[in-house]
Image (cartoon, rainbow, N blue to C red; front, side, top):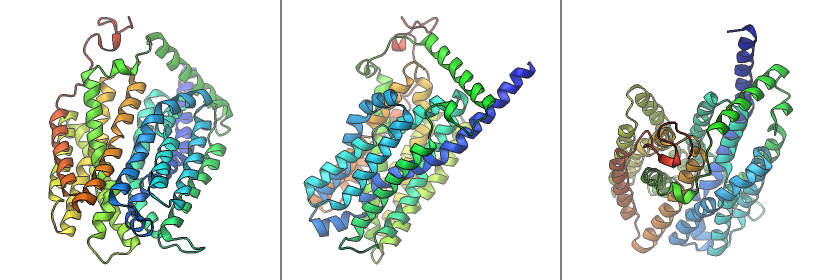
Length: 443
């Protein structure tokens, strides 16, 4: 290898490391703020019922409407992001997101709750693919997997932080506003502040990054240009979303991710209610208890990642995690609130590990020409689980006085998904996505 090639490789590695150091902390903070604003309604369920007369069914429906707005507007948001750039679009997302999140403080009836939760989903749509798009513009392919893994790990840390932060803010009082109103205002205002920070710290072009020297900028631009040229050389015609949905494997991936998200968001929105049944706990203590399942889940995600890397059978590990989730869900139907909480902690080992074990399957299966679009499709459909879970639980709570039926339903769904995991394939069959079976080129 020539001296110039070695210098170029060193400059590329140095540039990639600097990009990670400069943007990853901001993206993680943005993700945590997004997550907290998304799920903080789980902590104010009882307050909204008392102060606004919000029924359990209305709470569940409103909580889930976020995901309807998210699913409907994710694709349009992605289109606009490609037009205006990730920096502008991510800043816009944080700004509108923060405004709507703060406006939740002034909810006064069912309708205003529904509208603002739906608008919150509309505002947030495109955040995750926007970050992935930014990685694609600034990092070589070999570094993007690591960046995405670190970013996704932020969801687990966000789950841990959301409890103490939200629980603590519920004790704020003043100016005639209740604690739950201050909680929405303060957490929404933080996202608005992040809007300004993202505009200052994120750059549109590599050449604008003053923290990269000339050699690093040149090496990174050249490498990314070569990658783009290689992609264009093998890119075929655009594959419509409806055609993608004719592939049984993609339908299977959509179902699996839907089942995983169904369980995660059922636990996210109703866990504080389950904890309060233990009795005698302050809002801050409820928040602290709420972190326990997610702390356990972080350790479980790490252990499962090590095991699946050493003994490669991704379908089997995914199925095992879903069975663990199902067992915990069935056990959580106990009439003893403490035992139910312990069972949910056990269940979290399974459903959070499943969320990280799932993505290598579609990534390995998909043709590179359609991977980005299909992953967005799977993410959009899967996140609808966030609508059905709280809406169903709210309906059951209001009409039966219990969410036991919902927990049984989640357990059965997890078992069905565990069995279905073994049907997932690592590689497409010949001719999939309209490719030539010999050369892999588009027809």
